[in-house]
Picture 1: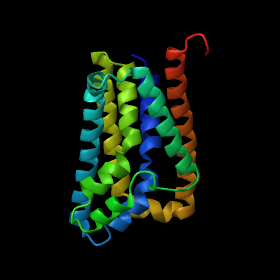
Picture 2: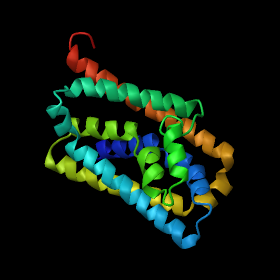
Picture 3: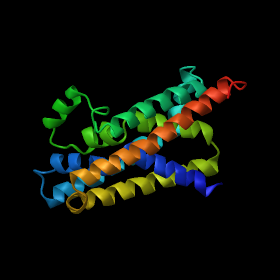
Picture 4: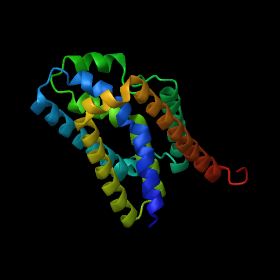
Length: 209
């Protein structure tokens, strides 16, 4: 196994989910909660993210086979989706690509925002789920599967730490700092999405690329 692959997977996942950019959303959604409730929401949201990403990684390719969708076609589609999300991040449209107006309205009337909309769709959105399926089709041996699951759990733990320190981080970075980080993550994410598209095109048209 190549450690660099797991590092690339972690960085790509961090750029795709962009937990730093979601910090202001997390703060606003948990503003009315006390310290204990906020800690519970943080824990539940990140456990939910880990479960969603791991399940997507494990069974995503099975669903593709059941629907007779080729892996390379899904790589191209997933790559285009990731690039579109990256464009939204670079343009500063945080969260608009992940949550519809109806989902936002429904989340307001719900007491617990940990699973919806924090975990799904703000963090583990369509782009993250698509990325999991693409990675699972490329590295599907048991040693890699185990390694990726560990990385997903490590990523969720890092998100938990970030959310736990949310008030301090926002005071340090400010809205301008968060916007800068979001745009940097968007650039990294766009490069990753283009890699997905090129990989799919290379497999479908081997003589072209």
